[in-house]
Amino acid sequence: MSIDPGFPVAEAAPAKVNLYLHVTGRRDDGYHLLDSLVAFAETGDLVEAGPAGPGVLDLDLAGPFGPALAADGGDNLVLRAARGLRAALGEPALGARLRLTKVLPVAAGIGGGSSDAAAALRALCRLWRRELDSVQLSALALGLGADVPVCLGAVPAHMAGIGDRVEPVAGAGLAGLGLVLVNPGAHLPTPAVFRALGGRFGAADRLDPLPDAPAGIIEALAGRRNDLEAPAIGQCPIVADVLALLRGTDGVVLARMSGSGATCFGLCPDRAAALRAAAEIRRMRPAWWAAGGGMYKGREAP
Image 1: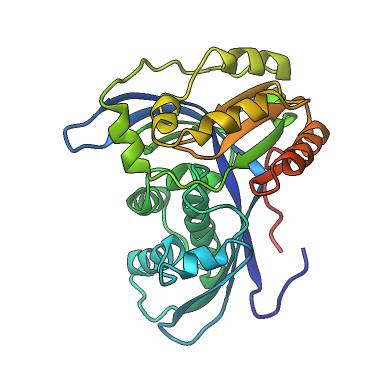
Image 2 (image 1 turned 180 degrees about the horizontal axis):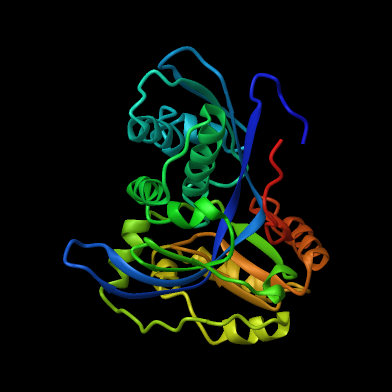
């Protein structure tokens, strides 16, 4: 990665994929209880950080989906994460200039905003040469959103509770699989999908331990589900079209919706198969967003 001297710190913000998502209940405060296996794709956004004057926090937006965030006035999770970290450190004079290159669609069910926020926290800790202890950092992350804690590590993990219980998992078979992500350009508000679920909760079915062979992982995942898939299709029928297209694409061995949608994913035997599948989907549906590749292997700090 080439380093921009104005932004000497860079952190990847990979797409988050719920390989399965079981909604097991709801607390009295309205927060839903989850049981999910999360993985990360090599496709993602990029957050860069550089120095700025005392107390200054600025955000530049770039990339194909940057304008969608600019339409919101630019006050997104990256800036909220920066302000939250500065407050938690108790140092209001800390300043930074941030740049978010937005490659992932907005409000797409693949944790783009959450991964951006987590990347901002990592980048600013490096830029400012400060650290929070793990309890403080986890609390700050959860306050930004249920997916932010799991995005902090950006490694395969079991996620439970309201997103506050994150346990990294090992599985050599998972690392070798390819991923295709497809979004038809539809936005699905998460609260609307949960409302459509209507309290029809399912049982947890944790995949633990993960099989070592890719075929074993595919077989185990096929017996699990995304409890939000049916209510999402009821709200946005094109999700069913995306799933049908994925399931009919050569090289895709399992297709499912991620998160609350509308992005769906296909698992492939390897990265090369995922790249071919994504290219074929772009050819068939040029107006849709499709990206293929492997699992995220972790960052190399510049």
